[in-house]
Image 1 (cartoon, one colour):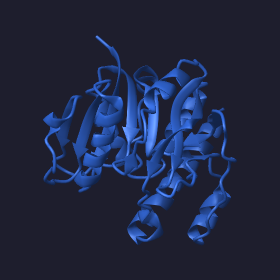
Image 2 (cartoon, rainbow, N blue to C red):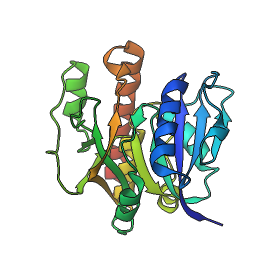
Image 3 (cartoon, one colour):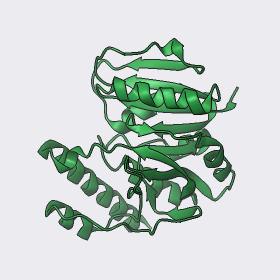
Length: 248
């Protein structure tokens, strides 16, 4: 039996303190209207008890480290609710964003939604973009930054893709799309999913004035290994799009 509730999937990489703060936000604003599946990607002690919240918290302890898509796909296999949300540990809530996001998914033309994302200073983050072109890869390799693709909207706006720090989708459409492509390890899983949803005639929608706060941890700007993962993920995405275009 499928419940009309929402399941939140989060993955911790030694970020249990951040996870605790997010779960406290969920308890404060969402009550028992949600369920949570928390994946511990590496062994770590928890500074909280899963039983201290008004909602169910289920733990998955990985034997070996997995990528973003593999972790959330594994969590999704336990989902029995109508809606599935992906949240990074460094997301903070200032209210309950889920009723408005779920209402947006009532439109059959919409496949995936996200709130407006703010940084801790209240500035809008660049979390909704157009699909990248090869020139974007060249600029990335040179260390250049790109301006936002969209002006800050006052009302919901369809975009090409939404960043994976906070996504909400119906379980039915996530299953139909095949979940995340686990061929990516850390980057571009969100881009790829939104692209595949477009092929199913389901758009990505950013839904202001609903918002959440993201304390971004941009490792690819500081760490060569993360930058390599980022670039290899871009190349995989371009290759998939080119192959799909050749088949048409």
